[in-house]
Length: 326
Image (cartoon, rainbow, N blue to C red; front, side):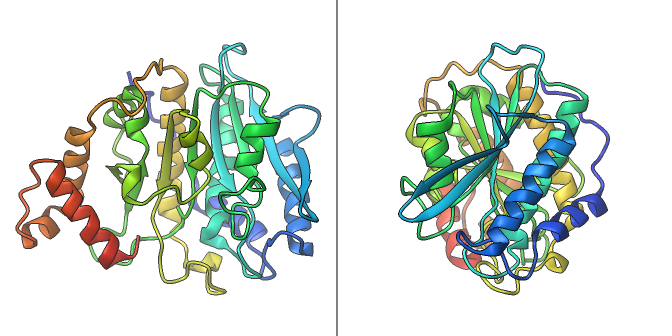
């Protein structure tokens, strides 16, 4: 059964959280801004009331002459022995720019949801992981924060990983500004039940799709490779991706608040649900069709698609990736 939706999140609080992190100098690994962000976020994890994951919130590591740190806290759940759910977002930037959408928005949402989980614990522990070194040249290497965490820092198995990246902006097309794409539901049948039971948050509509359409474009990469059930939430690329113009004023903070509400609901539901597989062993087509029809029915009709099966979804997905740059 899906968790009951809770009181909505404050868009202005989220905006303030983004503005504190998304400073003009950016958070590129090896820069002063990166160090400042580590201190700020470690303080926020403590201030929310999370417990350190191990001896401290900052889990440092080094490689190739660089100093990295994953920032990780725990919201204690009712069953402390069960493997935890993990909420993840990276905090570094690819260049010396604010990185509001990439990825301060996701960090802000993770922190706000974490505070709710401290105040009202989920069925099991929830780990809040703010990963370092997601951006090039570290992407999908052993130096990537999520990879290092999973392979070297994790103290036990993860029940499921809920990963966010690029979740702060409105889609730049009329009528679909509020869409959020979710991949990874195919990793476990229980996640389809979670998404089917999700309340319809005002301000954000969720479209499910196979991860294969976009690939491992963020920190869910290592979890998918190791067959950990996962969901990846993103609004896709936009004109300000990896640009100095990725500033807090360009974000849709009301949409972020809706995403935060949905993420809290998803987290609580996944925390209370058995995830027994099979791994990528079932067909998500019915849910994918329903969410695609609701979001892109007009586009499909213009393409001559009836959206009746996986082949139609494949064609529509290719078209959307080409036309929207997702």
